[in-house]
Length: 223
Image 1 (cartoon, rainbow, N blue to C red):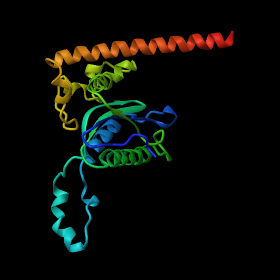
Image 2 (image 1 turned 90 degrees about the horizontal axis):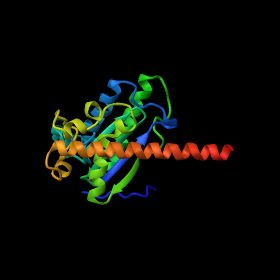
Image 3 (image 1 turned 180 degrees about the vertical axis):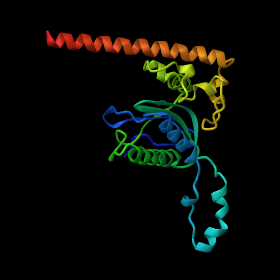
Image 4 (image 1 turned 90 degrees about the vertical axis):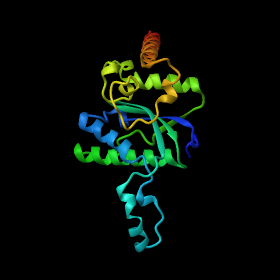
């Protein structure tokens, strides 16, 4: 049973990585597919409605033609070569669980068919951490928006596969919902950008320190 219990109107850090740390995004079409899933599955689908008869289902046909209410709010995201991060706010009961199950299953089926493989793509079920205070929410948004640069893969501001460019008002992004929960706590997007750059620098320094200590420990064990 999952330790984290999802509660409506609460925020959560959702993440997962490829099995054996393999790449889960091989090219831009893969990124587009995952992002499309984030948009397509963020609603109460017609198939989840309880339909008592065929005649009743025809009366509800209009559900096919319009978006139903969102089940989660996507605050921020980052798609890295072998893992992803999301900040989600649950809007409907079981919203995060249902949403992530659909996103993960659909993407795995797509990926396995495209690359002629079988079996699990991710390291088990998605992980979740409850974001229980505002400071953590703000910091985590910076960590996600700068994540690709923290790992040394690309420059955060120019990376297409995160929510950072929307936060900087550089492009529209319908997948991400209300970002004012974050930006309203900064004077402007430039101040937020500077905050993210600080998070990137501190996170990289921490990683360098951890790497140094690990190498030092290995040398001591060998001596």
